[in-house]
Image 1 (cartoon, helix red, strand yellow):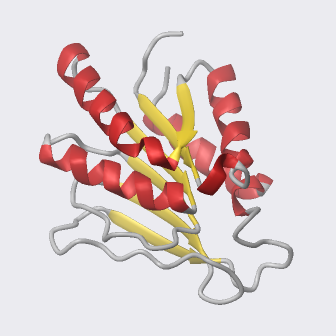
Image 2 (cartoon, rainbow, N blue to C red; image 1 turned 30 degrees about the vertical axis):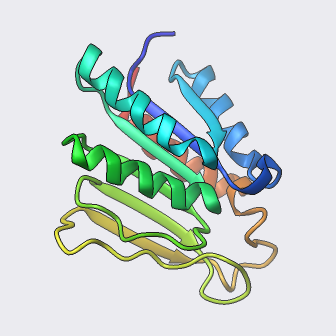
Image 3 (cartoon, rainbow, N blue to C red; image 1 turned 135 degrees about the vertical axis):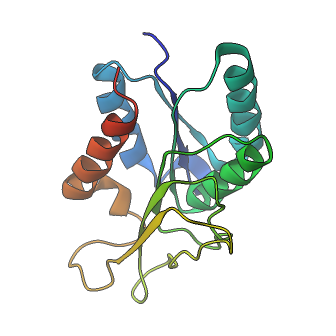
Length: 169
């Protein structure tokens, strides 16, 4: 499979509740997009790997997806990438639990969260952010909560379509 970009999906606590990310990565890999799923604790290694590949192989699109603690972690990845002047084309956040503001190197972010009835917070943007930030509250959605938001077929289809748009093989 050829590298069309850096696509990483980061799971939350214990790698137990974020299995919807595995489904999404499998779909992307089947379509020829190299997508890797890892634990939120790997965020620094993921960031350093992206930086190294971007230096060695040239600029490619960067897409980050995270659930729960993994959502917090993808924002930390974007912060490190900003220091290296690397743009994140798209970020999907599922129920972040304590997110930093979205840094200015992110072009578009969709945040799926819960104002009530579940963990997950709305995102804020850093002062110099000029991209598009969309907070989508799922508090009133029947049957959708912190532990299964990443597994919702309609949400997955929407996020996958956006990822594919940014990293066409």
